[in-house]
Amino acid sequence: MNSKTDDPKCVDVCENDISFLTDGVKTVLQLEKECDPEYTFSNGLCLIFNHEVFDEPDIPQRVGTNVDRDNLIVMFAKKLGFAKENVKVFQDYSRREIEDCLNEYASDSCDVKFDCLVCFVLTRGNKDTLFARDRPYRNDLIHTKFKTSAHFTKLRGKPKLFFYVACQGPKHDEGIEIQFDSANIPFVPENDDFLLVLSSVPGFKNRRYHKKGTVYVRYLLKALEASIAKKLDNQINEDIQEILTTANRLVAYKYEGVDKYTKKTVKQMPIFFSTFKHDFFITRNAQT
Image (cartoon, rainbow, N blue to C red):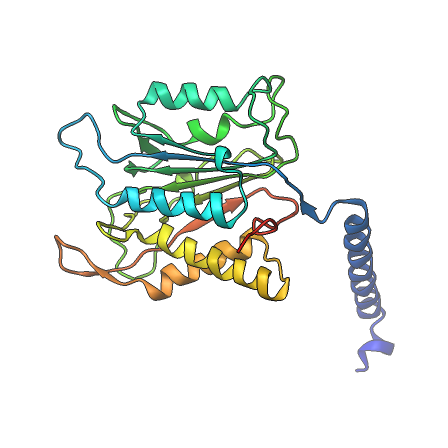
């Protein structure tokens, strides 16, 4: 049977499929004309909550975290072109101090001028939980503070990035298939231009070394360095999600450690979630 001549239903389906695809292309092209292709920013703000010591004597010191802190300061204040006064470090803050700090910046009355937010939390953690100096708190305390609201419109339609560099649970990633419940996926405010990064998938440990800092920050910085080189050498801008995918790939394929307790080979896999609607070129103001 010749499907084109003997089966009119098949002809209709094929024609409809082609029409659907054509309409889809037109829709995408029209949307690109109507919308800005990228987030623009001129005054980035970088907040770094760095936790090395804790009040609870049973919680060990996070040796090596200051390496991450110092390297992030150099990256944002010197290489990515953020103003030095807009790269702020908060060392070993209590739960109350963290919330007070967030309330200050997540308000239109804040004196600091910024149109892009990048926030790092370097600490200990567990599923859905981060640790302040004095006690744990839910990780969504950080990013939900910056939801657009009646008293906070400064970052409406602007990029907001959050990096939680902490354990997401007690499991060791031994390079086998990873499964985790969707209930462990953190809440990301929808339609509000958020990007949330976890240094390890929910349920698993984050790896850190005394002299080199955490595995994730180390490879994130390598990915940023490579992207800056492309920008300066060839005028090629990479979207932040390309950079984060590179960081994920570096961690997944380059890192292999040995757990000091089990003596087993361990791996690590970061993960990120995004409600970004445009490209974000974080290296657009990069400097030599």
